[in-house]
Length: 152
Image 1 (tube, helix red, strand yellow):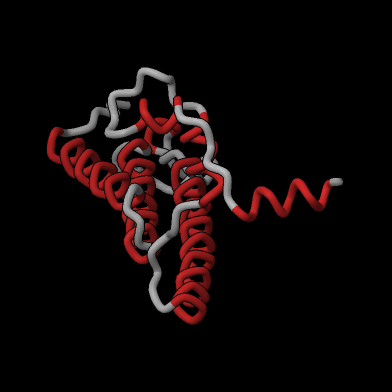
Image 2: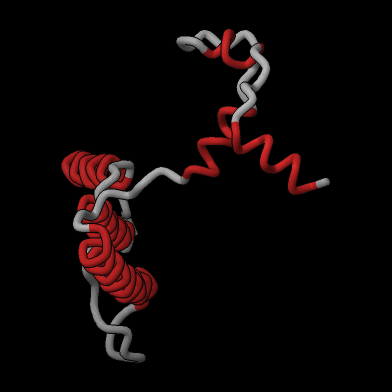
């Protein structure tokens, strides 16, 4: 059985995966949702193309074994459809909840992650103002004095 993929299907798959991954890297939950859907369609198309040309139903003694189609890619495509549907509904619920609570669907940065990233920067960083800020001692503030008095 000849299972080669033609160039047009390879290009369509490459475009679907590229667009899907590009949308996944965005900050908007709606774009992430659309990226998941596009990737799901790309996975389904890949599974169907990898299944080879259509064949006959696997009925014993009715067709030759060479004419029978492989049912595994079809079963995997059905599973991928269910997983994509479940992930789509979850992301829709998260996007709706974010819209209700915050008023937009943009994913915010985590303050703790940003603090840890700033602490792990090397001393010779090439960014603006990082060399002066990391070498300087922290300024005394009223809050730090209150904390010290509270410890005593």
